[in-house]
Image (tube, rainbow, N blue to C red; front, top):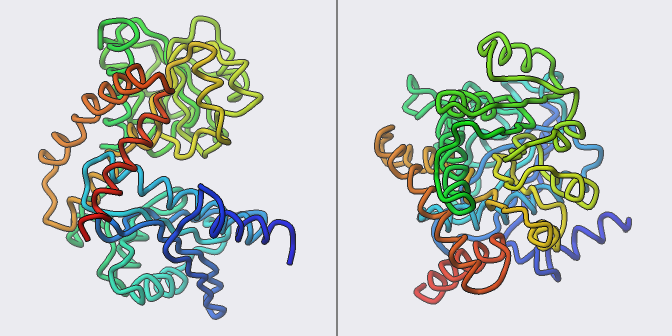
Amino acid sequence: MTDVTHGVLHTLFHSDQGGHEQVVLCQDRASGLKAVIAIHSTALGPALGGTRFYPYATEEEAVADALNLARGMSYKNAMAGLDHGGGKAVIIGDPDRVKSEELLLAYGRFVASLGGRYVTACDVGTYVADMDVVARECRWTTGRSPENGGAGDSSVLTAFGVYQGMRASAQHLWGDPSLRGRKVGIAGVGKVGHHLVEHLRAEGAEVVITDVREDAVGRILAAHPEGVTAVADTATLIRVEGLDIYAPCALGGALNDDTVPALTATVVCGAANNQLAHPGVEKDLADRGILYAPDYVVNAGGVIQVADELHGFDFDRCKAKAAKIYDTTLAIFARAKTDGIPPAAAADRIAEQRMAEARGSL
């Protein structure tokens, strides 16, 4: 057994980051599918979380990511007030090279085999059109197109929720929720990030962006010839002078031992999942006087949307629920101050309390 495999199993069965109910390894050699479905908790209801399609360096890395993401979904769904537990799936491979209809249909059959314990949706590397294909084999699929009975792109409300988290952070730190005149740095202007730029510019914020894809940056700059500038990379972005808010909106682990000491922003509030690279980073942020809006709280707009799809989607109803992320974020900051702990720890306590109460009532 390799050290990496041992590490994954230790996480699953022995660490505080584990405790998952079920992990399913999926393979369909005919289509090339290799996937991992992780169910962390069904205490609040069927596990709900997206499908990530990503070229992981190793299968062990994919399993570890699925475990982390699934656990995060349990906390996200609990804090969003949803009657869903947490789950996540990852498909191993470069979606631009190996994604096919046959592969997605095979994946749909694996999700269907779980009998509703896991409900899937879009994530990095998967899109509405993909969920339409998966749904042909699995009725526990959300994030489908309106033409196929779904809600469409969930990134719209994800960005709206992050924007509400920023407003709550501004209210808590500066006594005013307005972001007019604030300088906001966004790392990643893809599905969610470009919607976030729209909200910020509409309010009069100054925006600095970066993305590994030049075309994504180019589209934003073309749409906003004023008020938006671009920098070469994330390392440059986090060091921009006068930055008020830093919004990680790409992959996880953005807040780590290298980036936290270099941050110029006084608020971190972004859409990326699992932004804290390891336990203790939340304290490092607090020690530097940086207010951290917990990622799984502020980026819950998308999961609010896909959960609503299961009951007959209504956009206005979903947007009203996503708007409450503002109040939830303020409540977390208040709890953190009362308990003398970082906001991330306060959010965890509130989510764990809801899950424990649900388990006690089963």
